[in-house]
Every structure is written in C-alpha cells, then in structure tokens.
Length: 334
Image (spheres, helix red, strand yellow):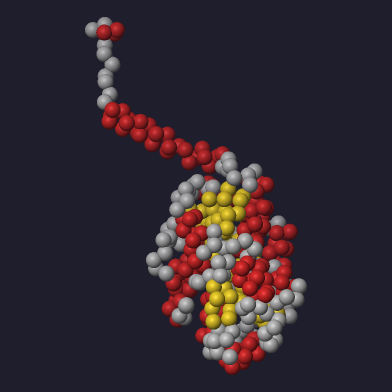
C-alpha cells in the first residue's frame, strides 16, 4: 500500500487523556531534581505558630534575615497563633512540599501538644521533615514587681498562703510555658491559676501591666523587660544558670529541688520536601548559627544555639515526644 494511502490510527478521547497523563507523569519524575537545582526561585514563608514579639518570633526573624542573603530570596515570617502552636503546625503540615513553606516548631507543637491531644490534625513525625535544630532555652520565672516576693521560696510560701489568688500567664493551652507552671504547682503544692493567651507578646503585655502576677517564659521574650527593671526574675528553669543572668539561681537550687523545664526552636518542612532542598536549608541555617553576631544575639537573650544535621533534630523530637508523653500522664493540664 502506498505510504500516502496509509491512515493514521485514531485515538479516542479517553485514550488520549490517559496518554497525556502518562506523559505528564513521566515529565514529573524529573521535576523535583530540576526544581531543587533552581531553589529558591521565589520568596519563602516561615510560619511561626505564635504572635509577633515572642521568643519563637524573635528567633525566627533572626534566622530568616540571616539566611535570606545566601538563599537569594526573602524569607517572610507569617505569624499564625492559636492552640499552643497547633494552628500553625496544621497549616504547615498540609502545605505543598516544595520548600516554600517552612515551620518554626518547638516543644509545644512537636512534643507537648501531641502528648496531650491524640486528635490533633497533624502528626509531628509523619507530616514533617526536620530541617535544623536552631536553639534551646530554659524559661525564666518572672513576676510583676508589685508581687511582694523576691525568691522562689518566698513565692511558694506566698502562693500557699493565697491559694487560687495568683494568676500566671502562658502563650496558650499545652504550651511549654503552661507545662512549666503546672509542674511548679504540682511540685510546690501551690494553686496558681492559669490565664492562657494567643502568644507570648500579649501575655507579656498583661504581665507588664500587672493584670497577671507571674509567667514562665522564654528569656528571648522577657530579657528586654528584665533588663529595663520592669519585671523581676526569681529563677531559671534549666539545670544550670544562664550566662546572661549569672546571679539568678535555677528554680531547683532556689527552693524546688529536682525541678526542670525548658523550650527549644527548630525549622521543619512539610513531609515529602525534596532532600536536596532540606539539605540546602540546613546548610544555610547552620552557617547562620555559627555567625558570631547571631550566636551573640541568641546567647545574650538566653538561648543556646544548637545546629547539626536534620537527623540530629529528628532524634531530638523523638526524645522529647517520649519524655513529655510520660510527663503528661503524671500531670493534669487544664
């Protein structure tokens, strides 16, 4: 049969659609590698699950500003407060896994909330790819100057004499701030009342105004007010004194032996983010933490820089989940 007489095979609509999907899928197999090579090609969003002005927000903005130059794109901080960090965590968990949405996780979102609420709409391990462990920080036990106590021992005595009359602020139910206070109540035999806020900034404002009497909070958030003499620090919740406050004892050595609490910060991406992108982000964040000015800023405000590979951060999260799962069973949280 002559060539010009040959008929082209006809392809039906469904068959053509299937062929197109096959071709798109085949092309998609190569897309992540090319996308990783071009990453980042547009601004990156870093979700912070608390209000602007708190310790989480301060650390996030410091790192975002530092890595923006090397990445060649702005890193925009997006504050999504609520439910002790769960609102922002859920948004990040369900975001596209392309490296353009990141999340500043912490003890609340990735250890305490999962231990307290089995019905969370995100999984702290399965739904996230750890990127970099940024910093750890004990909390400060700070009181309003109008409260007539100047030590942990005096606070315990006063709280026992006035059960239910002292109010402590926190940045939300299930936060590390609340856990620290509940542990204090339990170990000291006191009955201080919880007043939750949507973030450390509004909680700190009410503490400064004297509408609440005390708070366990991040040194990053409270140090400016402490240095200005607007708040009185009775103790730190870690196992050793802070270099920034060498004269302030730990809560354990100041009247409550065995007491310990703390916070930490790290960046995560949605699960499925290409490993090359995770590695690129980790490298830039660890470089940022090693810069003298960044380290000095963190240390000055009471946060210890961490760093390390993504695997180290993943192991830390697993350890915290195990520790706080056991702790939550022992302490009844409001």
